[in-house]
Length: 280
Ligand code: NAP
Image 1 (tube, rainbow, N blue to C red):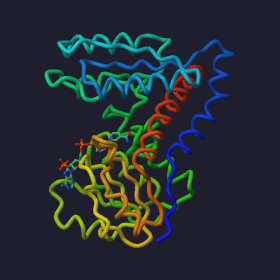
Image 2: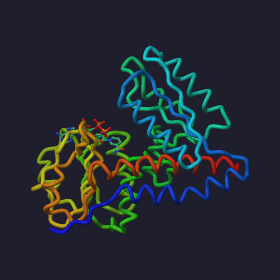
Image 3: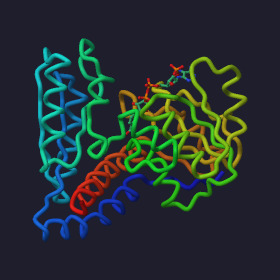
Image 4: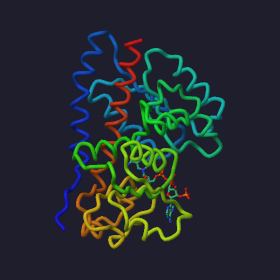
């Protein structure tokens, strides 16, 4: 089947282009949007992700305040750092890079981020607002998936969307966003029985499992739209890309699919937050 390759770099560029004038307008008012990133410990992948996000900010005139805390940081110390950023008027968004070292209560740290600065969509309050349909900053990967569907004008209403994965930052919020757009949503997880049979019913498949090449080609219904949020070692997604191309009408590659759009949504949310603050 001829497939449309959903080019995340193109979508990300269009999001970033749409921010340039907005950043300029803010700077004319003396406001520079600022994203504070917090990295705890020495995980090399996390360090790379944080660096990429900071660099992406700076390229479009968003200030990046990078905080790197040592591995032995306690939950209380991390909470204090977040509290200071919550109170800092020059900071518009806060991103705590996941995962933090195991001895830290990550959920408690996420929950301490002020809702107006939760541009990465990690608080349960933000998730609740997203699920209710009025969230300002949904988690960035779910927002990226929706942006790709919007950019390519792929219809959602009335479609059966099957999301494989139910994590708080990915599977659950993307299920909520698809439901808000009037898809009929099935959310699958590790205890789902007959997974392949359920995926075979999907018009839209979202893979958010964290297992390389997990979704098989013969699970994909002819004409389905396939979005792969997975990012595993060696640049491998959660779908078996070549095999899924056989039946998919449209599909995201890895790399160059959901990943770049995720970062652009983080930038957009930071600019949104700076504008919100400026309007107060
Ligand atoms: P996660 O927290 O580990 O969640 C994985 C989900 O997959 C869980 O809900 C789990 O079910 C489900 N699952 C595991 N094995 C399964 C199986 N055999 N059958 C059905 N479901 C199964 O992972 P995550 O943070 O959501 O990330 C998922 C993927 O997205 C990873 O590859 C990650 O690298 C990627 N990711 C990409 C971006 C990006 O910017 N592109 C951002 C974030 C994450 P249970 O709930 O039952 O355990």
